Amino acid sequence: MKILALALVGAALLATPALAQTEGAAPPAPAAAVTSRCGDVPASPTVPDGATSNRRAMNAASEAFNAWGPQAQAVQTCRRTEAEEARQRADGLAAQFNTNNAELRRVSDLMVAEMAEFNAR
Image (cartoon, rainbow, N blue to C red; front, side, top):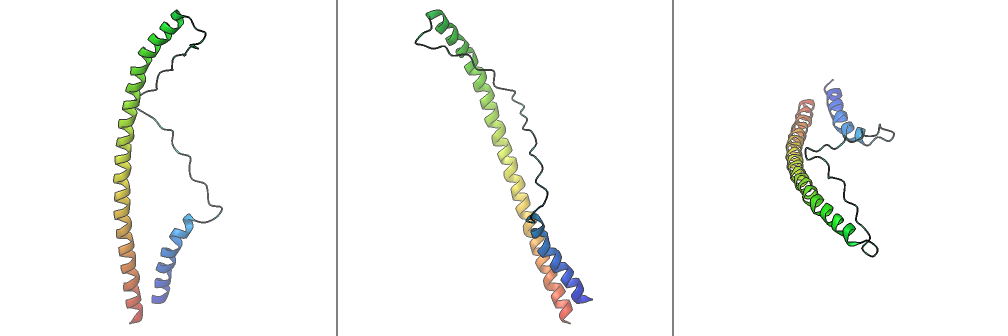
C-alpha cells in the first residue's frame, strides 16, 4: 500500500507537466481584446501632394496636422503609461508565480522523500 501511494504521488508529479505538452490538446483560448482607457488616436489628416497642390490646400493640411498632432501624441503618451503599468503588473505576477512554483517544487520533493523514507521502513 505504501508503494502504491508513492507511485501515485510520483505519477501525479510527472504527469502534470506532460499534460501541457500532449499533442491534440485543446488550443489555448484566444487572447482577450485589448482595451485602453486612453481612447483612440484621432483619424490622421489627409496629406496633399506637394508637387501639385495649391497654397490654400497646403495651408489647410498644415492646420489640420497641427491640430491632429498634439491629440495623437496625448493618446500615445497615455498608451505608453498604460503599457508600463501593464509591464510592471506582469513582472509582479511572474515573480509571484516563480515564488509559488518554487514552494510547490520544494514541498513536492519533500513529500516524495518522506514517502520514500516511510516506505523504506
